[in-house]
Amino acid sequence: MRWWLFAVILMAGCSHGGFMPEKYDGEALEADRAAITAYEENNILITEDLPERFPFTKSTEIAGIQDETGAEMQLEAGTYDVGTDVPPGRYDALLQDAAGALVIEDDQGVRLLEIPVGVRTPVAQVDLAQGYTMTFASRDGELALAPVENDMMEMDGQGYIELPAGTHTVGTHVPAGEYELLSESLPIMGDGGLPRIYWNPSPMMPGLDEDMEDVEGVPTEMKAGDTIVTEYPLQLKKIE
Image (cartoon, rainbow, N blue to C red):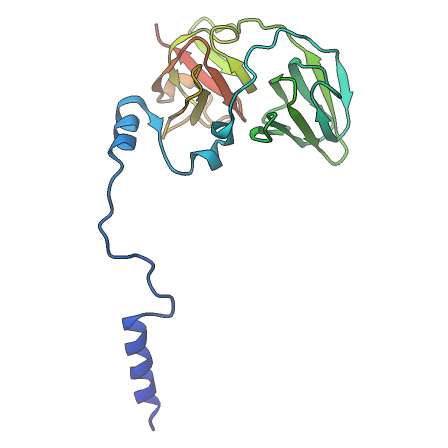
């Protein structure tokens, strides 16, 4: 009966190296003090995976304000080149009949937006610049593109404002100033080309949080010329 000896040897081997050896190299982990300070003082995320979570941070430019206006169009699923298939401009993108997704890439092929258009985001407002590519994916739905003016969005009487999914220029579509972020994240491409992502660890849950006054917001600052790049609707409250 030597099975017990084999078991002891096997267990000893597991305790030494295990079936899957550790990858940790034994060096002390160093905290990213700059990232900690940015979050603690300004609610801004600085992490290595930001380009994967918010791909627009890799773009050399965001369209921002578009003065040109295209014509209203009805599009089937497919990929469209802005300037050839779709005129440049600012549009309401309205999904009709079925769920789908809208993907916008800049002229370098960097993904700016990937919007799951459907129940949660039936409408998106997007800036389409010359050279951009727009892909609409849907099994049997159609996408209505309607040109919109560069008008300032209005707040309600208590200072709340909801931004639809898409791209919005601060100072043109959204008043500049200080806000409380009620949603989870506020992705911004700064006027100087530097992105910043505000983060709320306790965001409101659309459809569940009926009273926004009970939601804890975090302070944010939006400067004229900033471009908000969001894949979902955002809830904000202006700080007077």
